[in-house]
Every structure is written in structure tokens, then in C-alpha cells.
Image (cartoon, rainbow, N blue to C red; front, side, top):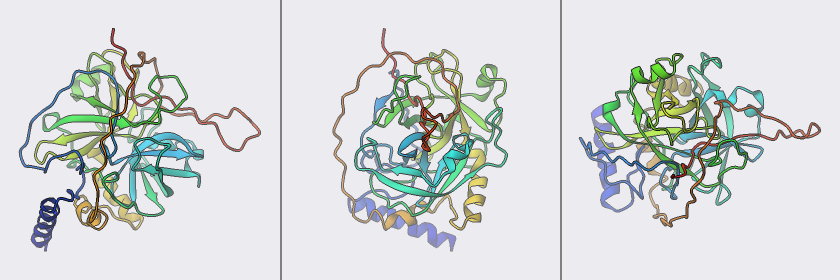
Length: 351
């Protein structure tokens, strides 16, 4: 049965490729990636600092979480029913209200929104707000995502510890202001290339680092995850199949552009079993190899997305930030909180 299932998946994926539609599995961007191939270890390293505007369909698994139409965290698409995010995004009960929404398939938040309600928020029961250990959450959607070239799932890494040498071309994506400390959202999805850092090195910088966390940045600083899209995905290509996998969830850090102060991420590979168990317990089980089958029906007739380039503007260096979100209200008589949030990606001003 397993052999027949695998043969069917390979045959269907080859059929889609040969007929000119797209690869329908997880971790593949139909308008941007070449056909997945085995043992491809080509590495592209960019030395440019700061975030850049993403293009439509370039990061189709990245989503925005919004409350009362205000973005407060990010997430990623696991399958048609589930979104992966961070537990600290929901530490305050206000973020678990019926007004919680997920924006999928968006590059610019105020254009062509695909909005889906959230039925259930599941945070890891062992999450610690003291050190942000086990900072992971699942969101069960009220209706399934209809996949397209703008909306596809991300792959999960093999269970266990991340081996840095197996991953390349790592990227962080999300929305937020481009300058730390500002409360005006950057409507355009940002992307920035990152580098994973060895656990032993990061442990020297962050003594409270646990085995469930990983670090990413450049030692020079200049690229960093700050407030705004906590819970967003850190994705890398896997050398065995050259597909995109989510290795981290934006969790916490000590500075936006500090030298030797990288961002800290929840290590997703440590929670694959937890994800499988929790999704099954709520009646919508996630299987690591299920994305191809469930995506086929939604991608039977897709069209390419125009890759119009958007102008970018250099922004000044960011300031210090704190990892958690605190909802505040500017009007005590209002039942709607004014949510303050800062930045996911910073743009570094060249000197």
C-alpha cells in the first residue's frame, strides 16, 4: 500500500510538471522554483543587508494573523486546515477572541485579501513565558484554504535536531514596520536572507537558550527579526530535495541590528510529533506527506502571477526591541484594543 501510494504521488507530480501547471506538493513555489531534484547542494549567499519587498507568490505559505483588522503576528500554512505560529502571540486572552482572522495569499495586506476565521488556537502546554521555551502554536481554521500559486503549504523538517550543513538559502518573511519602534504596519511582505548559527556559538550569547531553540542572523548584525511578525516562518532549502522547509518560528531576541545578537527561533523539527498528535486530536490530522494529494484538486488549473517589481526605500537602522506583544488601549471606553506592534524585518541604511 505504501509503495503504491508513493508511486501514485510521483506519477501525479510528474504529470503536473509535464503538462505545464505546477508542482503541487509542499515547499514549492510554482512561479519561482525549478523542478525539485535530488542531491542539489548549490548555495547562494547574499551579503546585502536588510529586508526587501517580496513578489506575489514568492512566499506562498506566509500568512498574517489579525485581530480587529490589525496585524499582530505571523504564521505559515501547514495544510488546508492548519496554521503554524508562536505560543507567545496568544499569551493574552484577547488574541483568542472570535475576531481572530488569518490573511492568506497576500503580498500587500490591503489588496485582494483572502480572509479565513480561526476556529481554535492550540498552544503548547509546556510553553514558558519566562524563557520562551516551547514557543509554538497551531491554529485550526473554520474553513479550508483553497490552494493556488499564491497559497501553498510549507514542508516540515525531519524530526530531531537541525543539522546546519543540510540547509541552505534560508529566508525570513513577514509584515511589520521597517523601523523598530514605529507602530505603522508595513503593508508589503518583506523577505530577508538569513544564516543558521551553531547552537554552541549561540549559547555563549544567550545562556538561557534551550535545545528546542535555534539561532539565525549574520554575526555583523543588520538583519534581524523584531516585533511585528512573531510566529512567522524561517524557511530553508533542504539539500536532499531542494524544497523549502520551515526550520524555525520567530520567537525572541535582544536587538534588531546588534552585532552578535542573532534572533532566536523555535526549532520546528523538535515538534513534528507534537504537531501530528495535536492535529489528529482535533479531527483534522496532519500527515507529513499529505500535502500533494490535498493540493492537487486546488491546483488543477492555475495561472502564473505577474512578477511586477515594486520600488524599495532604504530605511534607517533599527533600535532595541522586546520579544513579546502587549495589547494596549488608547481609549478606555472602547471595547476594541489598539494593538501595538513593531517590526519583523529591518532595512539597513548603508553608510
